Image 1 (cartoon, rainbow, N blue to C red):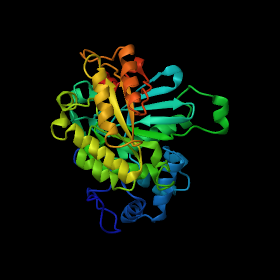
Image 2 (image 1 turned 135 degrees about the vertical axis):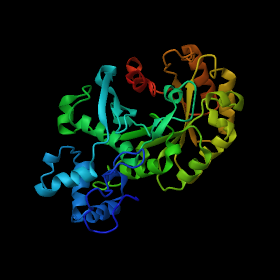
Image 3 (image 1 turned 60 degrees about the vertical axis):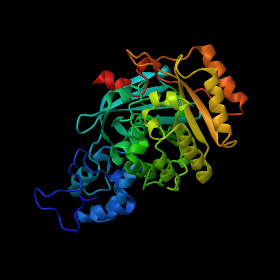
Length: 387
């Protein structure tokens, strides 16, 4: 990072330091750096290199955010170390709970006033957090609340990772009330799955998202130690970036937000389709499967009288099976309509027919469990209403 001092001397008063805000971006953070980069940065600021591992242990392994609990750091250095490497990146604005305490949607304010969302969801066998990769989104999909607001900026790696850590701390502190409290005394809850399906197009913020993926899967204390197989990265179909992600050696699940099997309709629903057509996006997704061995998810928001016709289900089934078997899974998603939008969810019978047609083609198909409908659950809704 260009802001790092190049020698072990302490910066002169007023000199740019590691934690100084970067153009439009937040102060640099421990999570922005690899383990080796943290050690070098700590030493560059005049501290002993092993302090980097201590900071990483507090952040990633112990989930500590109170400097008073970091007692292995010398009191004389603690404030400087925490201030330089663990600046506060997210300020809570609103938390809303739904589904009998099993879902919490949060709005966070960033250093520049931008708002982003994350959603923490408890299931019987896992805890999933849905996170944002951008403040806003530039993909301009008309049925999406985030897309309607446009793009403000990319998030830093640290801002992306901190959403997951914030969720993990809320779990540890018992702030998501649904569940079996007695069982959790013996086995505390932890985040097991991360989905990049919040605000923004992850592959349009490629470098920082890949950095966040490394922080999430690196073994503790260098990272959070999650399984890459529990992480899903969604994209509207940025074809070159899909190919690049396939070569990263990170076996995460790819989710392609398709929403229409024909170019004429997809041009309207997903404007990036005018650059990379349906066939190109599906070929890239199939290539991802061939290279990584990870089955791809096709995300398909079912919109009443727009893309939910039975013939479109048949077309989608043919497009997927002509590329092979066993490489893909379809997630039809009942659309969570945004206020004032002309787009709404399909009728139940139409949804059932759509799913039946896909399954008749031999395509594994599971209707997405929709959470938080009563708390502005669709992507971008709660941030928009907060703003």
